[in-house]
Length: 461
Image 1 (tube, rainbow, N blue to C red):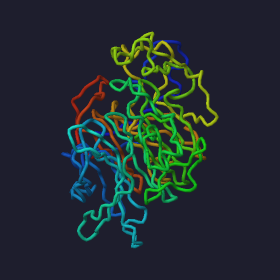
Image 2: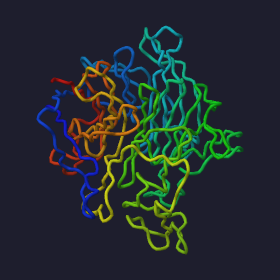
Image 3: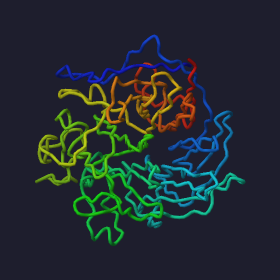
Image 4: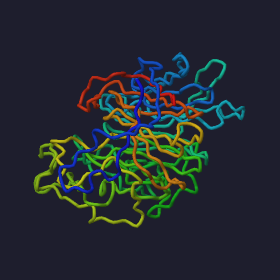
């Protein structure tokens, strides 16, 4: 099956006043690049991270399987690098999560390190008390296995929703780790306050209390300590690099060191952001652009006189719940997204037309000049609920999305993460084992075509 390059028009529904549906049938051109596709390997247990290694293998974490595996992309041969001890996995977003390979791995520099983010239970008794941690392993090339586990940082926030968990190493040799807002003020956690705007205090930092880290992107020294050049935010220097995030599950560095993230929106406004030190990305006061379009901050935890715990869960907040518009909030460090997926106008009927997000997963950047024509300097983000990769061309400075938005590699799957082969002529996508997506006719389904697999999309012409 060949992948089809299809274009979405930016601002697809801004010219209408109501009833705009998110793009369900994008248009394409006759000169679209052609891709072949194949299943490299299947039978994986909820693969969550995929990255191309210096050994020309795909390195993959299994969120539920609790393993780090290496896959030969040529023939799908799989070897287990590590079974990760102590991983707690109980709900749909916890377990073994992000992974980052040290840039000097297998370079003979004494830095054959692999870092992973994972969930563990701080209290192994009957009451679950999940936390996230980052661990370092040392890779033994002779045996092809990881050994010498070393905890870098522990006691990071974890919960039963919106964990984030993406891990990357910057050109500054710092660890960057995304922490979701733990689902505060949403769904089953609607009575929990959202902490994405809450910053750590000096006392918390001094005592190693990281409980104010939900809704943040962290910047961490490789020994777990706080970098001396981290931003001073509200008078406090901590691991917090940016804040005001909902559920960032995509994180990538451009070749010039710029950082980009992708995060889930509520029912609208998934965000792709350019990450700036000390930046405030608005959540939960703002979803997407600061524009009052189909989002307002319903503060369920402050319900009065009826306590939140006595309110039924539903799409609309009762009168007892305070509601704040986006434009009633402002902040000098607010950073707007460089792209949303998708912003809809007031009057959009979520119940009739469905959510307007792609459920953004992993994020990568395509930089190869002589690879797929027209793809150089593009961001690629995976979609969980639409079974596609969305490509966003950047301007020459890498600061803006320009020239359209393109849907690639549509299939009846949930795309969790992706990796680009160094020559740029193949993209590898990992798929979830379960969950909802759209089929070829763009109807909702839970029957996945390739659950728990690695798919290759190779450029043909």
